[in-house]
Image (cartoon, rainbow, N blue to C red; front, side, top):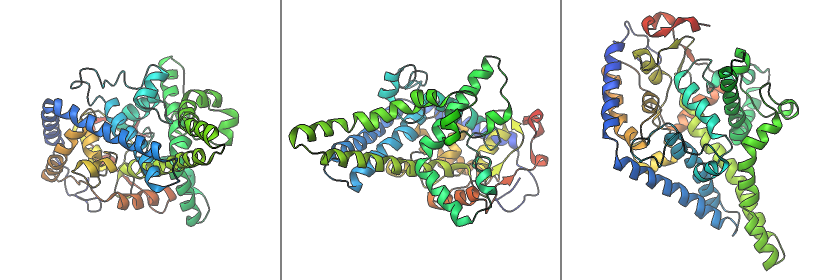
Length: 407
């Protein structure tokens, strides 16, 4: 492996000792979780709700950047902070069932509306992110492996400037254009395989996006009508029909115009674009760059190799206080989160300097940069001017691998 992303080492670290240190710290952090973690979660929920409500209740006055930003931040934080950590089980043991991963936003349209309503179906997110991404990080089976997903764009014989424009469009629309259909596809793949049906690797691993072919023919595992009805429909109806409706009614009965209502509708649309850009900035940048590794062999969870991969294929951002972490969607602790996805946000703040010290002790590179620096690294991968590192099989700990999955 490498002592830094660029310089080779003459020996590999003691992965068993590294695993022992990480396991020991994880157990201590989990044992410390309690009322303080729940109180911290509820504080962040209040911040998120305050953003959403203040933005929504002021967006009719004029089309203004403050209302747009607040609604965007409320939507982003409800996904990346609240839904993300609750669905990983971060509060199963310290919330008396109030924030339980098996109940949160699943089981009914009402639960989805009350707990976490967004473009993606929560059950599909749980499958795609919590299982496939976290336990296949950096592999082709990882549905969030940017370099693999962007193969078509990377290989297009068009000017790089045109590719930058494509990336900009993707960033502004990615939640409904890419993330919603791709997570739903992964849910359907899992359901089909559990039912004993054969699903080929291309169907399972190739990204699913909304394009003309999808609208007309759907996906091999589901129709476009089913997708729009079950996945996109509820969020669209609440966000762009129910939310501006009171303003249309007030305009109609009070002044006979639709001036305030149109302010609200345009603000909602602009907030949707902004929350796409914001979430793209803090999510897509987590595991992409020419200093990040990808792998062609699967490994056993919670082994020394597994923990090593979480470090070598993850990038942290600036972090340490609630406001900074809120604006990063609490996705600035990727190394720690991938080691222990079931911990709370407060635990990641405690863990970050300790994990960094453990990595330094074992000579393992710990990548941490500004999110804007990581954005440049991400775009370089997307357009094909740079490539990720392939981790040499010779450096893998063979005892931790499932070599049958070598490509």
